Amino acid sequence: MALQDCIFCKIATGQIPCHKIYENDSVLAFLDIGPLSEGHTLVIPKAHFEKLDQCPPEILSGVIQVVGNVSRAIVSALGCDGYNVLCNNGMAAGQEVHHIHFHVIPRTSGDDVFTEWKSGSCSKDQAELLANRITQNL
Amino acid sequence: MALQDCIFCKIATGQIPCHKIYENDSVLAFLDIGPLSEGHTLVIPKAHFEKLDQCPPEILSGVIQVVGNVSRAIVSALGCDGYNVLCNNGMAAGQEVHHIHFHVIPRTSGDDVFTEWKSGSCSKDQAELLANRITQNL
Image 1 (tube, each protein chain N blue to C red):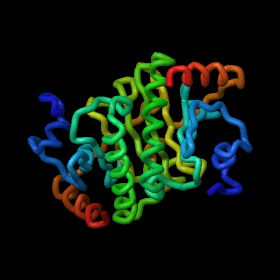
Image 2 (cartoon, chains in turn red, purple; image 1 turned 120 degrees about the vertical axis):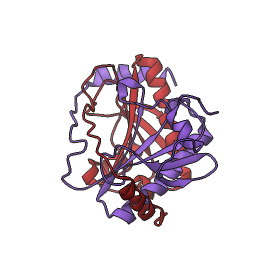
Image 3 (cartoon, each protein chain N blue to C red; image 1 turned 180 degrees about the horizontal axis):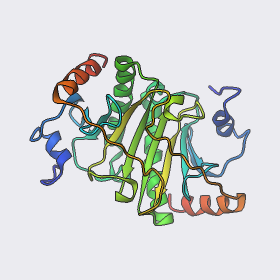
């Protein structure tokens, strides 16, 4: 289903143009319009789902296969040293378009994309309690 | 196949303990030992593959399903506002353990995890050339 006001639904249906990398019946990959690095690509299901945990298994499976194939192609085409695959879910996580999308962000050694990584810590007792709380919701 | 010197292979085979969130025949989810936020979880295939683009389709599909299920459980358990799903591939991308892993990072509105997002731009001509270079490698 396409949502009337969703920009990625409009891209998926061709109402808004994009620089297409790949498409099949259910998945579309295209260049990000505001790239963090050269070749920054988005991979989306054509159908509208807001977040990863709301995406049906068969669709999600199709999307991640394309993420893998596109990543391989980006590494071959650009000769980059690595890449991040990132899916932001919810405004608090930086999701700007509320149609699930995976970023594939090519990386070069020493670039300044995603330099922040502030690891915290967690005691053994805290971790046990936390793991239990999460597993009880599975 | 388990690699002798891979810490995640050792966690997958039980030689190193972890705070387990979920496991099935091919996938394991456990708390990150250096959490970026409370409930930061890693999801890995039990078999050793270095990067996403090297992971066989059926394994990748199983891993992403667990990422979805664990994300849903984290949101229910912790009541967080969102979450990032992140897979770093290659040292240039910040991959520290060279066994593919998806981070699920719970997020709260206004926290200071991943605040950096420096969008660039790309001309239409540049984007067309770039898209062609990548698609030719698919």
